[in-house]
Image (cartoon, rainbow, N blue to C red; front, side):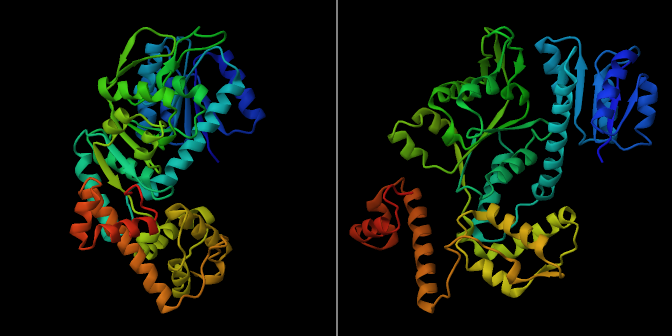
Length: 440
């Protein structure tokens, strides 16, 4: 179980914390002496720390730095009686996961602690895949090559691809390969934050802006010296897009209810599964923001266009989930791979990962059998004739070529038809047939 490291020189306050942790059966070791606390980290394993900022012989930040030398991935919450924004910013920049101002409700502290532990668990899982983008198909190799090249620069990157293709994985690796790797990677999921909270989440908010409102640091400020990843930027409310444009152009902003300009040194990566050019025409996305984001686009192909990568991905997911499901699955049967390759994968890599995890839970043998590769969609697949297979290959090849040539010609269909060696009418008909009327 997770054991929590607690340090506070106030014995009465510490007694109160110990009572609430025991009440909730949360394992912990509590200290009033920083010397005793630091000695314990050589002998005991901790999953998280709760440390008071002001100590008699040192500071909470200094203790946290020693704590992180032993437990680099363990989140730390700093307790402080000083609630000014500058203190909070410095604490977070020094490596704290969060800070909490005294006095506080113990339930609030425990809620934040549990959230930190969940995030730590998720990060440990992501580390297994973060080191490697799996695949050797031409499309994925080209995307990896582009990502590595642009990582060395500070250029804004736009990741394009359907849901579940691995855009966040690419963003994490671009950050890791860059000179900003020691800074924070702050992920902002535009679809997950309610529009009413979006502005304060991004820019922060000053105390007293509304009744009962406490000051809070925004995600952009936490990313200073690091990278901001705007996931699903197409879902960003139009009302916020102009403010994001200003951040990209000037690297500054004001907190909600504040007048002070906050300057930040950040790198921008954005991702979308939507056709932003179409959204511009419909008034749902700002054209000027699009051009600021689309400096270095990288397209990540859907899984159905790189099915030869499936065996390597399955091997990767089996290795990743063996510790999770507490098994030692060695691989997948040949029939299982054939079954996976025949499926059209509307949910892309994310769907494949879920199916493999489920299959591993169900499997009692060393190799995953086709019976445990359960695909619940009605469109699963049917027995194919040679004609069906040929039509499928032709369609995917033509779509890929048309998209590639249109991209090179800037959407000029006359030039594209000439390069492809077909008439304009034939190109127009094929675009209609494959749903490529917009040239995308």
